[in-house]
Structures are given as structure tokens and as C-alpha cells.
Length: 218
Image (tube, rainbow, N blue to C red; front, side, top):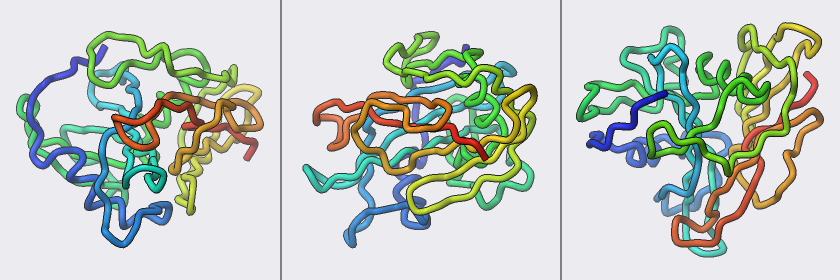
């Protein structure tokens, strides 16, 4: 299990995300610019213990005008070759030193562990507590989903679609990462998906459930 270090990061994750969000095709914020606050999410463990994997939700705006965005991220101790386009930024971690932080939809480790979650081989973890299962994350499983490698990840105006080639009977699939989260219980996918809780209006607002990831035939 990944060890959560309660320490400083300079700049913080939210500061990096605030600079990065306006560069995304799916960002729906206003003219005032992003002011993201934490609004939910969960982690997955890298079995090799090298890469941090987090699905973070940030709320941007206030009250009924707030928008919740899903930002899956990976944290690495060195740059990921060929992923310059997916780099959110670098940060100095109080324990681990320099961390390269990537948009996880474009990182093969996150895609591998997401496939394992959908196949029932991985267990979602709470964001800020070590070795603690997040039982609020619900999975409509896709048995036999074993991603060999991502074929490509394409950003759209509401989703990032990760096309994967898989082993077994599932064949080629699309894992759709829902970048703009909306309340709703169903895992909105042809084959399955992941739902989890978030607070659309920020940490002080009401808790909702929405689709983080849905699975479709390619």
C-alpha cells in the first residue's frame, strides 16, 4: 500500500491545477479564471510502489455556478518519457523531493491500474489516509479487462477517451474519463464504469455521486 506523507508540496497540487486547467479543452470555468478547491476523489496503488495514482475532483466557482472537474494525476520521481504534453507541473515534496505530476489519463500506470479496478483486481483507497479502503467508490465491473497498453488518449470537450488494446474476450475498448462531473448514480457506460462521491459546490456543499469513468466498445 502507498504511504501517505502529511507534508508540504511547493507549489501545491491546487496551485499547479489552477495554472493548468485553462489549457484544457474540457475546462468550463468563467472569465475570472480557475479557483479550484478539493471536492472528492480516491487513490489507486501502484503494485511496484513507484508511481502515485490519484483521481482528484476539484470544484471551481461558487454555489449553483460551480463546476466539478475530474483530474486524474500521477506522481513520479523522474520524468515520464514521451509525456511532455501531459505534464501538469513539478513540485517539491517535503519528504520525496522533486515530483513530476502528470495528467494520469495519459500515463500507462494509471491506465493499467484503472483497468485492474474495473476488472476487480485493484481496490480503491481513500485520498488522505494510508492503507484505508474507500468503500464509497462503486465499480460496475468489466470482467476480463486487462489493458495490454493504451493505444492513445484523446481529450474532448467533456471527456478524455483512452483507447486500449486488451487481452482476452474484451478486445479493444474505450475508457471514458468524465472530466466534467454531474450528479447521477448510474455508471454511464455500455459495459461498466466507476462512480464515486464528490461535492459539486466545494467541500462545504452537499455530497453527490457521479460517473468518474465509463467503459464503451471501441
